[in-house]
Image 1 (cartoon, rainbow, N blue to C red):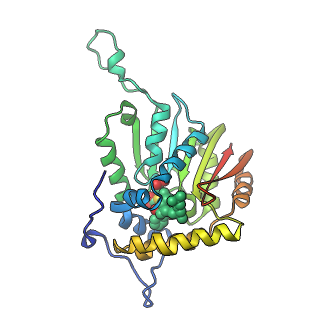
Image 2 (image 1 turned 30 degrees about the vertical axis):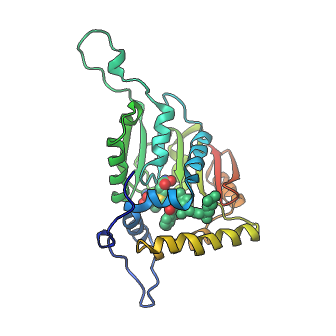
Length: 274
Ligand SMILES: C/C(=C\Cc1cc(O)c2ccccc2c1O)CCC[C@H](C)CCC[C@H](C)CCCC(C)C
Ligand SMILES: C[S@@+](CC[C@H](N)C(=O)[O-])C[C@H]1O[C@@H](n2cnc3c(N)ncnc32)[C@H](O)[C@@H]1O
């Protein structure tokens, strides 16, 4: 696991209003934010969620229904947590070379692929570095792509399952993103959207905000990332509730959509079938 001791000087500098408030208005600002936090992103997630985010991500991938032999896509993949979990679902789990006959002919890897797409090159660099450090056969079939969730570079009906973890809240046009996801999914296939839960329960909202203000942001400020993690609270405030996410999915063409609250109500997962 990468060390948390990343020199602040190595992090690219953000742009601020004269008031010192970080601007996160457009795609470029968000791209820059995720490039800046990339070196410490995984470790801060482990620390700040006490490792729970790994359980939530496993739940999201299970809900995607991804199975052996499927073609799968993880949008806004970041450092690849969900992409790795998807590749474990779709395989292959033994080296094809290992099951070849005695002939010396090269056997091509299965066409099965788990694709991780993100527009942050720094996040993708972390993802591909992690992939190189892992030995599981299935990880060899992961392909990392730099691209935009709002304009997916795939034909219609390309994938058997799609995940987007902590990404939908961060794209600048959620309707367009969901429309694109619906387009690239095969009919009858599943989208699994994991993100923070914008609760309709005032107490849950208050506790979530108190934890961000009093634990998450102070810890992040130790890495010079106070404003980047302050963005979390405003982005959740601007997000959609579970019901609104279900409505959006049906609006763009999914046949069914259901939102589940997880992580003590702090997180949520939308499961939508094309
Ligand atoms: C994996 C998690 C968050 C990913 C993430 C998403 C974003 O949109 C960000 C935007 C800006 C900076 C960072 C992120 C980002 O890391 C969820 C877990 C990590 C959270 C940072 C911690 C959230 C704490 C919860 C409010 C309460 C957790 C309770 C748990 C039972 C301990
Ligand atoms: C909070 S991270 C989530 C990473 C990973 N899915 C996870 O669960 O840890 C959000 C990611 O979304 C990416 N992102 C935001 N908007 C995007 C867009 N329009 N196209 C592609 N990636 C985008 C960011 O670069 C960042 O890596």
